[in-house]
Image 1 (tube, chains in turn yellow, orange):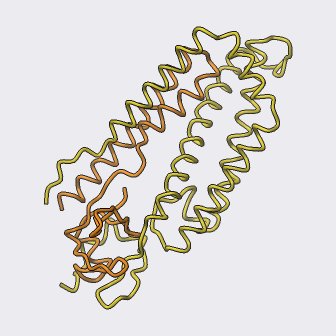
Image 2 (image 1 turned 45 degrees about the horizontal axis):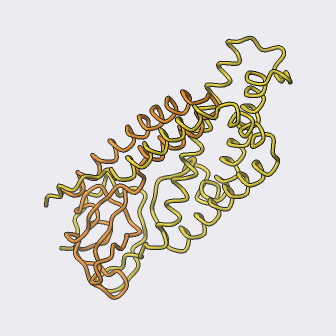
Image 3 (image 1 turned 135 degrees about the vertical axis):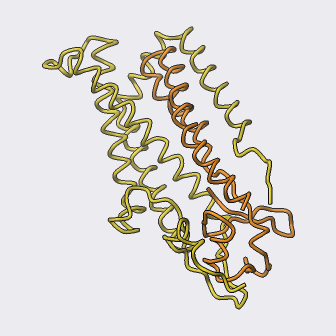
Amino acid sequence: MKNSKPSYDFKLIIISAILVVGLAIAFFFYWETTKVIIRTVLESKLTYFLIWTVTVLIFIIHYLRHKDKEIKSETIITKKFGVFMDNALGGFTYATIITTCLTLLKGLYIQKFFMDKVYFSEFNDMDLMTVFGVMIFLLWYAGVKVIDTAKETYKVQHTEVVMTEDKKKVVPNDNDEENATDKNPNR
Amino acid sequence: MKLYVVNPNNQKVYLNLTAATRRGLANQIGGYNFYLGDNLYSVNDVWAENDRNSTATGAVVGGVVGALGGPVGILIGGLLGGLIGNGSDTDESSKIRRFNNS
């Protein structure tokens, strides 16, 4: 069987590119204003509260929906800790990563662009650049993971439980993907 | 990667299972035919698709995170995020092709 349909969603990629370029142009012309807006957002307690709450909720809903429908999907942290730890408590991990990254980046941002507060007095430029790079990557990684989890949570709604011909539920098997071809199906 | 069938109403219905190939899927089910709700399908009706679009997500998140570095930061963040996400999509694409060609 052949399927020549591309697996990329080019429409979404083009919209994302337009969004990023549009944001860059807007920032270029209103940089001084946006600097102040970014500072206000980073210093607001509401930002951290919302990020933390929304992230934890996404993961808890994800866990509950997956549990109800016995979905087999990729692990969020690691299978070693079990499904509850992986799915439900994953939210606490990612929420903490995001808010901690933002707190450190807030310090770096204000120190670098406003210079009215010094958060890292004992750090030299190299240390600050390293902290900045690592925090940016962690923030990106955690942000992508949370969005992926939210998309999957939404998709679970449209998922059905597979049943055999005699209407018995098929339980997802963790070892199916690589080893399945060695076994023989009934037909 | 998500597996789906198209139901009689022409809507995609996702399976709660994943497999590398159609044969692998049949092994999990224990046969080539299966029910989703009241509708009977064959594993040959099942298709795989990318459910993540990591390129787009990576680019947008990269752009937002890069905003801390100004306009150039947005562009670099968006580009790097998109490139990293694309790596993940490419890997996913080969899995999808493998399933759909099985």
